[in-house]
Picture 1 (cartoon, rainbow, N blue to C red):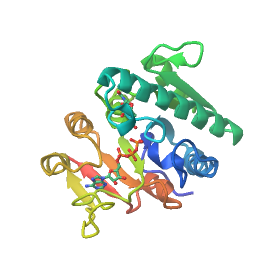
Picture 2: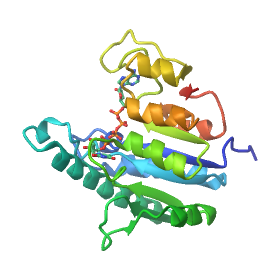
Picture 3: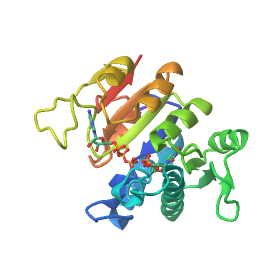
Length: 238
Ligand SMILES: Nc1ncnc2c1ncn2[C@@H]1O[C@H](COP(=O)(O)OP(=O)(O)OP(=O)(O)O)[C@@H](O)[C@H]1O
Ligand SMILES: O=c1ccn([C@@H]2O[C@H](COP(=O)(O)O)[C@@H](O)[C@H]2O)c(=O)[nH]1
């Protein structure tokens, strides 16, 4: 069997991609397809921790949040990621994967709180850990939560699975002339203000020497190819 390139990874799943072709919310076929990709990688014996975004339900900076106190809107965004995390864990359970959801904000009747040693224990036991509620702090994003939790658990790489197949010279959804990088340094990504991830997430990964792979969650088999170390997406490195 082909060997995975990593023992432990932090997978950041796009919340926005969860909508599929719907206007908002969780598209059933899309979540099932994401879980099928995750199951393939879990089968390779890779220890998997997941952060899922909330853009399919709520963003603190979205038009719907206009006029709201920013911190309140951000807490709503974090709660949206809890809903996505619960849906993801349940979809994983339905295909026989064992997942544990841990929340950065206290809602103990719903999910257990994030406790780092417990998360490490779950990973060592082969369970998939889903980190919900981002960093637990307003004014951040789930990309930064991925960088933070990835650093805390000693992941070898952050895999950002999103709607585009890598980092481009400009947003490829807005600029059809944008070109894709196969690799790019953290400093270049930050100085060129590339919006595929926020600068805080890039800076944290850079400081922790934690590489990032940006790739498409929509492209069939891309996650497995990334985990096997094949040429896929864009590597962001030191
Ligand atoms: N330079 C760039 N290269 C690639 N994508 C870019 C770039 N600039 C902006 N983008 C946009 O960034 C998006 C990905 O980041 P974003 O945080 O918005 O979504 P996500 O992480 O997939 O969703 P969520 O935050 O809900 O988890 C892409 O869909 C793309 O349109
Ligand atoms: O640490 C965090 C993470 C997220 N938020 C809020 O949640 C939404 C959804 O997260 P996305 O990363 O955009 O998918 C985000 O817009 C913030 O409003 C947060 O406050 N802190």
